[in-house]
Image (cartoon, rainbow, N blue to C red; front, side, top):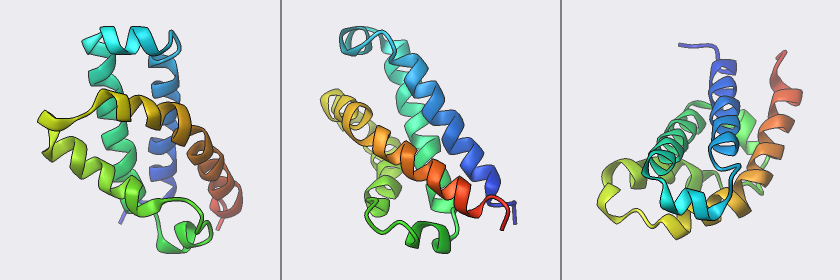
Length: 113
């Protein structure tokens, strides 16, 4: 079994990449297929990494929509023909900031445990 902290690193890396890839804003995201592909791939990796976090860590933050985050990977990977870019942008803009705060709080609380 891998050290659970590696998944926090993966999640943090994905969040940083998504921020970087979308820094030019919504219009560029909707016009650039490479950016869309990169963001969607990082959302998949991020969601899969959430699946690997210990339940003790996620249960400590019950207000986070963990099941939706976990399910995102399957929707993106298996329902790729039905990916709605408006929903992806909404996730980027409205959900990822709170998720990032939660991930940092988990890192602070559990990194050395």
